[in-house]
Image (tube, rainbow, N blue to C red; front, side, top):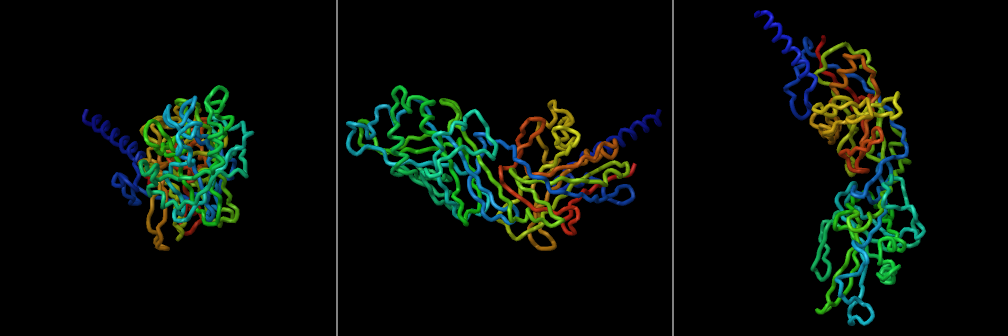
Length: 496
């Protein structure tokens, strides 16, 4: 009886050790003391070469919704990836119809209104949330009106980053030069009664103010009577950075924030002394009137950059809309049957003294499935070991319902001092232990991997959010043949 009991305890213990060994948390952050020490007697460590090839660029399928942060600006000098131009297209409209300015009984420059009342100015305002690039360089931003004949810019469509509605190129409504670091300062309005900061303010010309006044009739069949009539006259705007040599960064704009609005300033009277005020049109989310149409055009031009002329031991990963790399680990095909305690895919930056442009906050690894019409699928097992999911089927859940467990899987940006150059360098570590164990134990297909810096993920026709900002970040990493910054897979294992 005692022998049977001892055999049972021993079996349970061995099974527990094997299971526990294959689910270690990230050694770079937590739980390093749980992995057996490498003693070359019971526990071993090998490093397998990973070979990468630069991904072929294809038209980007990313779609930008109304509530996403939109990108605006020009990067004119990124040595790694060249230039970027980003424009925002949007409709701004009143919050109700029939529409009137101010309060219902305000007198504002109409016939028979008191002297001293009237319209003063119109300002397009953008709520600024983040900046990528050189924030000390001025950006010249301008506003143009959409072409009056444009009919395809619709509220019920979510557009890709290569979409551009028609614009009247000569109809510049306003422009301003902005230094990003100055946007933290407050601007005071209406005799200092109101104020705002982190806001780009673009004064529009008198001609557009006069257009508003001339169409300010809310009677039947007039523009201010209904949403549909309003849109026949006011098609919308494009905001663009009028690229000069100094522009070198991107603004991140929240279109649905209260600080994004079209301000119409005026002097009014309503049984009291004349007062200054403003009314605001906004990007509608569809509560009172139909949603506003929006689009975010982002153009990358990598001509002349390091990406266009890479060394044989370099790879370039740029955030969406960007680039990626395909990875192969041929050594897994012949790796001896073992218990995998830890398998870490390690990517290291080739450091540079240029620090204006950040590396992506997260990189991501998925599987290249050449036998599938979808081509890519989520990495099995390791995205979130606490959630059951099956990437081999388009049925839910093919992706972890709880999202990625970054503490386990990794992929977040890490940094250290490079001992060769003394410069700070970024690196990324992915825990793919269970995926590797499955290949070695079950002889499953050793698919290629893809590493990228996505804004969202696209699998089986579904679009899933990811943790990066749009167009934010790029990095040059060493390939598997790089002598100093080698792309590699480190495996800690025990022989069976």
